Image (cartoon, rainbow, N blue to C red; front, side, top):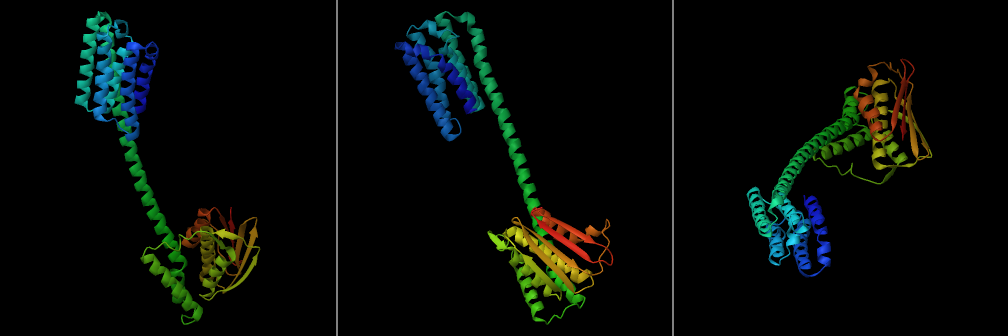
Length: 360
């Protein structure tokens, strides 16, 4: 509204440039109107809102004083309703309606109408007064309606923004819970399953180390610390994969690993890739019926391809195969979230191959 009414005022001041160029009374009137306009709009742009006292000053100067001075100085030709002096009243009432309270705006419009009526009657130009009064009122009404429309749109936008923020917060909480569930599935649950199925020796040093790491993770989870996930920078792919291999060996799986030209990966990518490999190795230990797995990792143009192969019992890749948490969330979803892909190839009695690629 500052911009709209400011442009409206500028269009009226433009008509007074010629009068100002002639000097004398015209320059005086133009200077008064220009000073009032600059004070009102400069303050408004700086503060983001019209100052109420400056609105009244503008109404008194541009809307009332300028036409009265034009009449008193016997400048009747410029006091015509169609002259720039009288048109200033329209932008004065528009600003008052846009920036003032409703009662104050009505009072300002009434004052300008009374002054302009007196000036036109005194100057003998009352014939065209009706149209000019309509212009004064319509300018104020349009500014008031436009202000209320923008205010309502702003309220609706704020409400929509608040709903979006709440929805994003809920989505973030769900994503955090999902990530925690995946991590628990890949770590603590896998360890407890190995113990329950008596596949490992709980007193073995590697297994105790794995239990210690997972206990530390649980403490961080309870404390809601995101220190580890917030780390940035790059991580060597070989280092991340070695952690996954060590975790698998801690539950009794023998892993034959081969690496070739591995790149450094962004930290989130390296962690998600290692988690997906960990789950693939967990699946070998818990479901394949074998204690041996083969891991191959190869760098390719800044990216990486990792395969995990076993010669176990395999499974049917039918519609129900991807419903498990391990394949669907811990492997496929993790890789998709970092811009990678995961492919699984298996058949009953023929083992399983899991291929992870980043980027896709």
